[in-house]
Image (cartoon, rainbow, N blue to C red; front, side, top):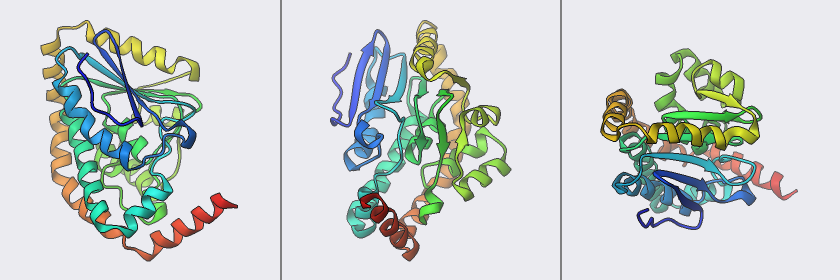
Amino acid sequence: MSTYRVPEEIQIEADGPIRIVRLNRPDVLNATNHSLHQGLAELWPQIDEDGDARAVVITGNGRAFSAGGDLDYISELAGDPALRKISLTHGKQIVTGMVNCRVPIIAAVNGPAVGLGCSLVALSDIAFMADTAHLADPHVMLGLVAADGGPITWPLLTSLMLAKEFALTGDRIPAERAAAIGLVNHVVPEDAVMESALACATKIAKLPPQAVEDTRRVVNLHLQRAVTATIDYALTAENRSFDSAELRANLDRMRSKTKD
């Protein structure tokens, strides 16, 4: 396996030609801080350059896939425009890196996938989801625009009406509902998520690699066009939303609740 340059918040291991990516902040349900966010942005080009990689499985350590943005990190972004600019650039790189990655990406959704976690699932090629897990993109509930999340990808995965409903409300989507409307492929028992995802990755990794990579590319051209058409406006809108009074009030309320 190639040597990967990743922070401690991301673990990489090889299972033959399969690369297993684990989000590694289990004590905070793999909530995203700056280091994890930057690490994800820099990860996908490295996987793309790993000539021995044939498939990727992405999951979370502990009880969650990812609980979304760390409240302290979101608060820091709201008060630091320079850091926010870097973070939004990383967000774009995560999206484009996953869309353009040479090898198929399989999500093993072992627990809640919220915010960026939900985006990682939506940007994967195939998703296996624990029957106890849920998806949610609650950006709007905080007062933020989701630049790298559901509004970009969901209209290609489910109906436009459903994409708008879940993006505009931030409502949770239980596993069975997510599968029924096309946001994930399979719902399996919690203890079978990794086994199922690895079995799928193994099956793909045994197929002729050029055919797999080119087929993925053909399908993802649709997604690439959608990303190109929307992401710059979405990033501008998210940047603007970080300055809103509603975001600051919601952050103060949520952070004080966690302290009580």
